[in-house]
Image (cartoon, rainbow, N blue to C red; front, side, top):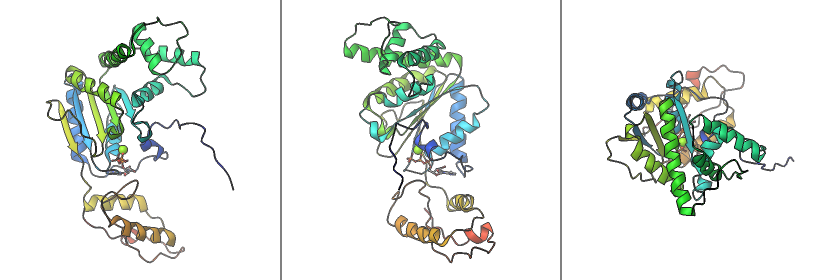
Length: 313
Ligand SMILES: Nc1ncnc2c1ncn2[C@@H]1O[C@H](COP(=O)(O)OP(=O)(O)OP(=O)(O)O)[C@@H](O)[C@H]1O
Ligand SMILES: [Mg+2]
C-alpha cells in the first residue's frame, strides 16, 4: 500500500481550477447572465464602477459563469484580481487578499525571505506604491523587514486601518493603468477583515474602472444590496434541455461500465431526497439505471444519453 503525506497547500489557484485541471466543458445556457455581466463590464470600463453579487446554491455554476466572463474578456486589456475564500480560513484575517498578493508577486514556498521581499517590491513598483504602504503589505504577508522599509511605529489598530487604506489605494492605482476585473469567490467563507476591505471597495469603486463580482451561497447576506451600482444576480437551475446538453457533453459517446450505471442509479435515489445533497455539479436531473451496453457494441451518444431520464428542476 502506498502512503501519502501532505507537504503544503497546492499552488492551484482555486477550488474550481483544482477540479478542472484538464480544462472546462463548454458553457451551457447562461446567455442572459453572461450578457448582464458584459453590460456591467462595459459600464465599469468607462469609470462607472459596478458590483455584481452572484449567488446560488452549491454547484449551480457561479464559478463557471465567472470563468465564462474571463474567457469573453480574454483579448481585452484589463487587470484581473481574483480572491478565494476558504472554509478552513474563515477566521484568518485577510486570507483571500494575502493569497491574491502572494500570487501576484509570484512568491514560491521555497523562496528565501529576501527573495520574497524582492518579488513583492517588484510587483508594488508597477503601481508606484509608497515605501510606507510597501512596509504594511510586507507585514501583511508576514515578511520580515530586512531594513529596506521604515519602521512605522503604529499601534495595532492604526496599522490595521492604514493597511485597509493602502489596499484601496493600491486598487485605485491599478485602475489608472487598466480597467480592473475583481472576482471575490465564496464570500460566505470570508473573514471579517476581508469583508471590511471589500465594504470599502464597494463604497469606493462607483467612480473607478472596476467590475467587482462576488460569488456566494445563500447563507451569506451581503450588506450592499440597494446601492445604485450594485446588482444582485441569483442564478437558478438550468432548464431540462440545458441539463440534458451537459449530460450529452459529459457522457459523450463513451460506453459506461455497469458499475457507473449502478452509481448513477444510487445518485438518482440520493438526489431525490433533497436539494444540493451531493458534491460537485448538482444537476436538475436524476439518472435512472439502464441496461449496460455490452463492451463490444457501438452505442451512439444519443443511444447512451437516451437511457438517462431527467426531471424538471
Ligand atoms: N452552465 C454550465 N455549463 C457547463 N457546465 C457547468 C455549467 N454550470 C455549472 N457547470 C459545471 O458544474 C460544476 C459546478 O459548477 P461551479 O463550480 O461553477 O458551481 P458553483 O456554483 O461555483 O459551486 P460552489 O458554491 O461549490 O462554488 C463545474 O464542473 C462546472 O463546470
Ligand atoms: Mg464556486
